Image (cartoon, rainbow, N blue to C red; front, side, top):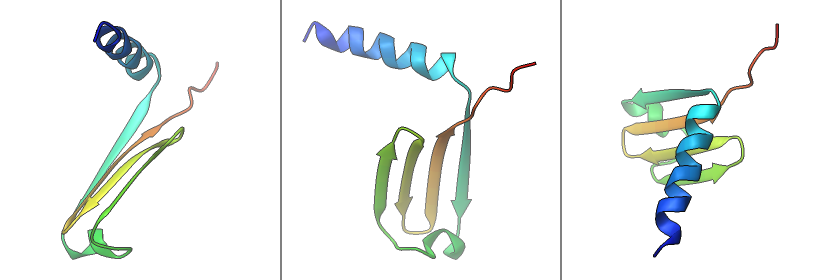
Length: 64
C-alpha cells in the first residue's frame, strides 16, 4: 500500500503538468453511439451512461 501515495503523486503531476480539455453531453444526443461505455488510452478518457457522456482529452501545448 506504500505505492498508492506515490502513484497518486505521479498522476497529479502528470494531470497538472499537461493541459487537458473536458466535454460533457447531456440528453438523448449523448447516447448516439450506445448507452454504456467506458474507455481510456493515452489520448484521454471517456464514459457514457444513459443520457450522459463525459470525456477528458490531453491537449498539446503550442510552442511560441
